[in-house]
Length: 131
Image (cartoon, rainbow, N blue to C red; front, top):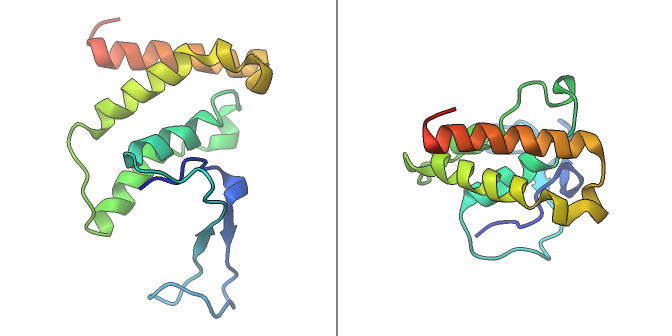
């Protein structure tokens, strides 16, 4: 199952004094808005979250890589992560970046399109193994 609309606006972080803490006693985050939930691969949510920031300056994302972070979290929870998941992520990135012009009414700014082009080029290079 995937969330389908994973972004920071659909996340609520509990404070440390909240009675709703994880098993280790620390604060937890709670996902909201499951209207787009469906079957799918976890990589879809990770790339969707990443895509929200393609046009953001590097200091905003602070080097955070949603695919790697979710893969690590899944491994920690003993959930399946395959060797090919990063390749799947690159395929999803390439497709999402290639259709960016169709999202002009939503994403319509030069920073986003420049970011999408950069992502498309990087993904294609990794997928094809050549510059």
